[in-house]
Length: 307
Image (cartoon, rainbow, N blue to C red):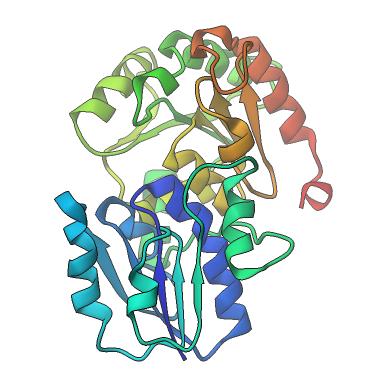
């Protein structure tokens, strides 16, 4: 069985789509998968079992990227084409079955919209894939030895970024004497590039003992590192979704984006919202003490209950 799976250009949406792939692999253990996704999201799928090929999509004017994708997949007879981009390409390919997600925004979590494309209930949770090499590197960067608080102070939009001083206050509240993660090591994660480095710099500068992982990890390595952490707290981002997919306790911070659509999904994951209109509140309206309360309660949940 051969499956073409067309998914997002963005990391967060790509991570959310992994639950569908995990479901399909379990339902069709003999299937081979070709994934078409944005280049920045390619690493989400690099260690996926049953992967035959990843085709990176570089967006072009006039939709010419779809022509480029069609030229690479049109001469294969597909058993199933899943198109989560809502394009017309699925109808232009030889396929036994097609599942095309309806485009446009609508109410409800993105995960439910993805699952509806294949008629799956309940919606399967996202997963994170990494291999032995990534696990070994993660162990070298974050060796065994107690709790680890991971912070994600970056995002792809400046309005989604929680003020650096709040991250610092939170770190003190969670790792100080008598706190739930007393004495925990702190790791700071972020993507590549000058913008990510600039967003993370105030936090790193104020935490000289933190493990600096900003721009140092590809996505499978980031997943392996996050799987070793006790708690991740970060802005609404692809990193947040990746953390939740690993099963690590994850808190996503939301203000001007709708948690109702993009809250982290995992066995132990939740969104903490800034005060104000949902999806339109400023990040500055979210206090460190409020986040610390939720973090403490999340870590107190028995894993068996949370799962």
